[in-house]
Image (cartoon, rainbow, N blue to C red; front, side, top):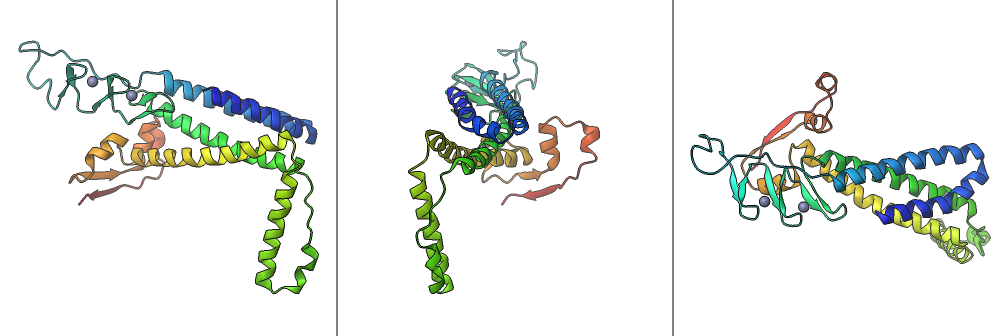
Length: 267
Ligand SMILES: [Zn+2]
Ligand SMILES: [Zn+2]
C-alpha cells in the first residue's frame, strides 16, 4: 500500500511542474485524471484486501435428527476448521479458514480471492493496469520535454555506406547520443526514467494476471477449479454470459449483447 502512495507522490513531483509549465488547462486536466485513477486504485485495493474473501454457508451438523437427509450431500470435512466443507469451498492455509469459491491466495493484497471479493480484485487489476498505462504515457510525454538535446557526431557521413550498414550505423548513433545525453539528466529526468521502466514492467505483469483471470471467468471457473478439472472428462462451457454474470450485468442488458457459446468435451 505504501508503494502506491510513494508511486503517486513521486509521479506528481516529477510530472506536474512540467505539465503545468506546458499549459495550465493541460495541468488541471491531468490532475483530475490522476485523482480519479488514484482514488479508484486505492478504493478497489482496500475492498479486495480488507474484505472477507467469502464465508461458506453455515450448516447444522452432527448426528440424526440434527442433520436432515441429504443436507450434507457432496460436503467433505475440513480437518483444520473441524467442520463440514461445502462443495465449492477450499481451505486456505495462509488465512487459516475455509473460503467459498476460493480462486487463490494473493500475497500482494495479503488476502484470499473468493466469492465475496473476486469482483473487487478484478476491478483493482483493471484500475491498476489503466494507471500503469497512464503513468508510462505521462512519463514518456514529460521526459521528452525535459530530455537534454541529443548531439550526433557522425550522422552527416552516413551517405557513404550501403543502405543496410546505414540503418545499423544510424541506430547505433541514436543509442550513443541517448546514452551520452542521459548523463546530463536532472533528478527529475532520472525519476521519470524509473517511473517509465517500473510502470511498463508492473503493467505487463498485471495485464497477464488480468487476462488469465478473465479467461477463467469466461470458462465459468476459478483458478483452483481449473487446476482440479485438468485431465477430467468434463464439459467445458465457454460463454460471454459468464463474464456478464460475474460483473453483475442486468439480464435485460445482457440479452442484447453478442454471445459466443461453445461447448466441447475435454479429452
Ligand atoms: Zn477449513
Ligand atoms: Zn488465504
